[in-house]
Image (cartoon, rainbow, N blue to C red):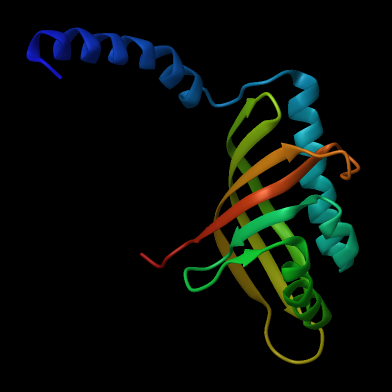
Length: 163
């Protein structure tokens, strides 16, 4: 690109990015109904965890979901989640004792939620309870197969690390 065109293109690109940046940094976007629907989705997922209901949890996941719950592995597809969920819920009772949404961005049929969470796990047989804290980033899409109309399609967990 010739120098005489470089600067105007750069300036125009920068100016066009300002409204987009403002939208991305807004803590909550979307209508009240959309925000409430996503909140209800989160509540339903956590309630299913508390009941130990694998099928109930999976109702709110898109068939093509991809999850990275730790650094070493990621799972693709709803059926890839079932064995891990079953194993965890057969052995532990899980209780979300904190679930604070830091930001929620809704754009059409997609929503991105960033949340701080704390989960208490209590072994069903032997062992001591544990606390797991972290941050999650969940991407939801509108999905008719979900009772609330939203389903998790991507999720990453960032565990809290010791100071």
